[in-house]
Amino acid sequence: MKKQLLPVIAFALASVALGTGIALSQSPAVAAETATPTQTDPMQFARGAKAWANNCSRCHNMRDPKELRDDQWRAAMMHMRVRAGLTAAETEDILKFLQGSN
Image 1: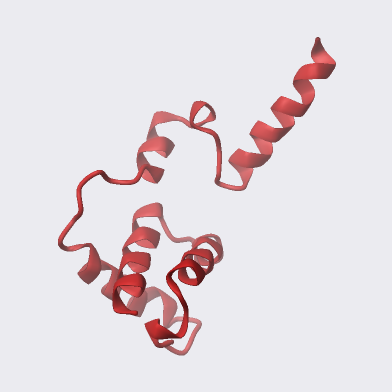
Image 2: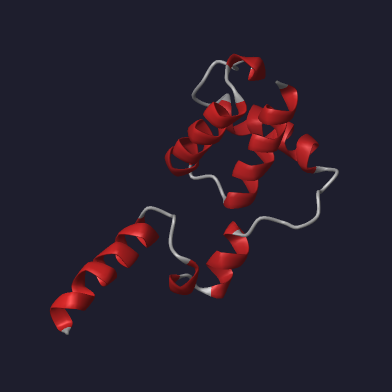
């Protein structure tokens, strides 16, 4: 029985470490941070533009949002969330801005 649980436990730990944890493995605080809001926030685009300018320009020349497709921006933002230490809310705001601008 223990040998059968090891792969499941290893998968759960790996997915949590990668930030993609399954819902049952997340604490309520983490689940709330990563949950997608059900209503659209009219200020999300503006917050995203500001966060993009403040965070991304620290290390990058500002790129034209039309340079990448929506799916490419999502992949880039998931990578940069880890590299830049962005919160889930900041990441979603920036993504909303980038996808809304292209």
